[in-house]
Length: 492
Image 1 (tube, one colour):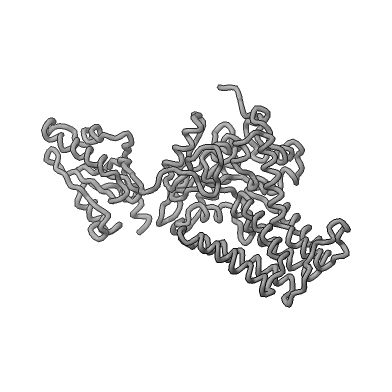
Image 2 (cartoon, one colour; image 1 turned 90 degrees about the vertical axis):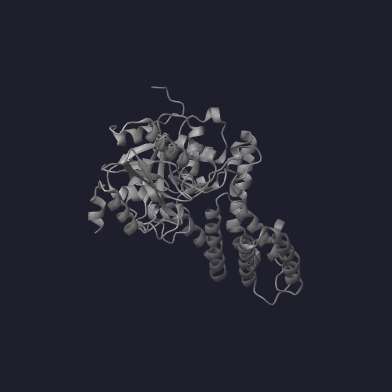
């Protein structure tokens, strides 16, 4: 039945079309599906729409214009051409298949059928419910733009076009999900982006077979990069329009998914997840300082706890200058269990903060800091040093720009703690080596995850360590294999 339905042309009988809509999408059963029937020049004209997804004011203007035909035109006039010309809207297209008309109606457009015609007219009067662009909570800057992506793909593409007014910018629209039919757009510069990368991303998205992608970009990512149980993010998310536009200009391919306020940047490396817009809103020297502080925080979130625990187990390894490191008091609970309890307790607090209403979050913070932390030390559950180092590691985790990367680093930290507890110094060294080899082994859409560190590219690696001034950064990163390596090409 599915194949026959998709090939079914639009019949001339409006009654047959109405019957098809009743059987196919529940017209008359679902309260938000509707049909408006008009009589124009003694012929029937039907509008099909979905309440809540259409701009009612546009529809009213169109209906008023069409009804006025009865007062101004003769019966001998070609009604279909007349209706097409009188549809007061910039986006009007023709369709010839019934299933296509259903998809358009369920997407928020209206479809107009004229009695005796085998062609329908689609008018884009969508007005999706949503919020206005605002600065994303996870990517705030002190000075910079305050507009961020929202859940409407049309608004998101418009925010990007506002920043890149190039005739070679492309937004290639695809549909994903047999039932959801979610709009997914590929964004790239036609003369810059690598055609092979575009083909790979397009092929992966077109091959998605699923009922719907209600989890939006995350579902697309899992199909696209086939991450499995690898905790490290293989694509980068951003909710900032300026960050997205910057990556498009560098030659990346971006994926916009309707209903999601974030876009997917491909391909990305480990070091892409350590970047933040704040670095580029400051002078190069300040941006470099901020970047190094961030690197230090990420490093602390990874190895501070395992390294301190190693020194606790083997204090003879400590240099004389820092021999004071280590717990100064005995405890009935092993240090490794204290570290795990405190680290998992921080995770409890993070989850509680997410689920706690804002007016109650301050009270929850006081409970966590005063009651849990201080009393746990007083009763001997934790030694003070454990609280200190776990807190510093947690701060380093929160200083990581990418939320996905921070969680992955936390998992690695816990694994390193287990290895140190079991094998001491050999466990720390072997665990760290395996972690680095694991990262080197990862590929994101055929791109090395640890580039430009491995394979080593000195110029690109220096740009990772030092935030260069924009006038001196004229070459696009080689990781994207851009067709045009120079950022300011001559105009054709």
